[in-house]
Image (cartoon, rainbow over all chains, first blue to last red; front, top):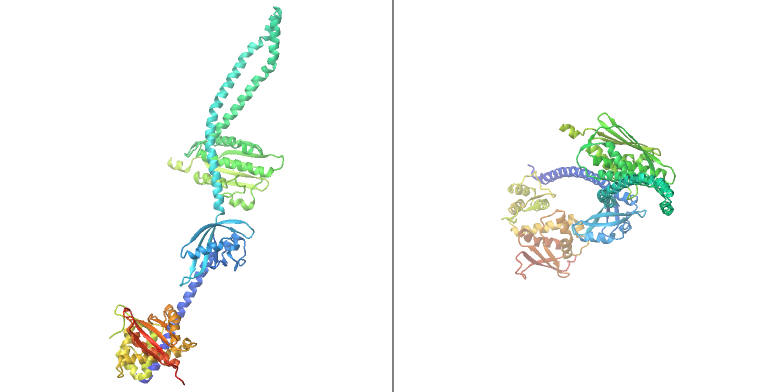
Length: 433
Length: 197
């Protein structure tokens, strides 16, 4: 070995090794940069895709950035609030941020109301976490806001649905209670009709009695009889009482029909069985009468149907939803006019299925919402009038529980036809057979 | 004799190895380095690199091999190496010392700001976590971990190198006042007036 060159040799070798180290480090750095870029891109996508509002703020409450959901929720453009105080969004922001910063490491949850750019109040559930330096100095705060508007609306709708359910149960009880007095009212009316009929032969003898009294010189008795006859308005009474009894009997029959329909309709039927769908439709029309009678006439075109293996209670619910929707669609179209609409209900057998069509000549379904009408909680009706669950539940009953079909044809301004198709023999029963 | 903690296999920065290698060449020449490398079992074509850390025992083996080149005592050699290294490092990283008027100021800054940064980035992780405070403008107090004998032996040379850099005379004397502190060795630093040119 050349001893005088050792220093140079080691220096050159050192340079060579360090170059290699540098290359390795550069390669590692390059890979890490790529990974960091990928992670950054992923986080950016995630930040913008996440359906919650994400706001980054400084520890003193200055907004640094907002994700897409936050901008859409609050109605601001991308950089509109950057550099502004978070109190622009809600007045209690600084207190909340201070709490988050002091609760080191924990996530502070709170329900607050944000204020959008157009002044709309948006209830949100907040979660936030602060980021700290190694020395424990707070660096930034990430605030996640979950829009609670849907939840609040669902809570209202749920309460409404619970009220309706309670009302349904109450109706069944009321129907039962009404049924008994209606029966004895009816029985007594029939008794009265018979009694009046039985009085007729006696009343028909009145002219002969009057003649006999006159011939026998019982002038005084004859005068009393004439007075009593005038006072009783016998002619009028004889003519009107039977008619009055008949009208009362007709009313009792109608009330009994309504009560029977309500009993059938409100009966909980969780079992599949043989059901006469035409009878279901008639019962449903009786129950729904109050919804349509002021706005539409109903035309029935019910074909001969076999008994269908289905859950009668569930299908009553479907028919009721569709008839009520038809009535509402007509009401929306004729509001402010003297016009009346028409609901046509058809039923017919179609090979192995039974088809029920409920067609109205109402306002029709606008193109932009046709894809959403079967979505849960989707409604265009005002709060309290529709839960937004009717068609969603109907679809679930027809398609999921009965293996059938539920679809519609519609034309804006002309009307809508909903078609329910139910297999005559349910698949589960068919398999069992 | 080794100076590493028997419980932990210590590692020294490659920078310390490089400094010792350069010291041997400068003081004794390349032939001496070749001999010392051979004695301590190091290969000529495997130089130590400053970004890495190596087994502390190898450093002490190189130092012992260097001792064999001269009639110096270990303490004297360590002192001289520490003084030489301090001057070289201050020359190489001249920015570290700029702005300070004397050794005590620099020591205070080194302990207060520079060492935590070095430890944070693990650049020279083998510098012990010593305590230092300035008593007044010309006096300081330093406490080294008692277990770290190597740095205790090198301390006098480091202080001499610092003084030489600033053109001043710094004396180091053991302080035995705190007999209860068995974990540290205490030293007083005294700064004499600047030497005139």
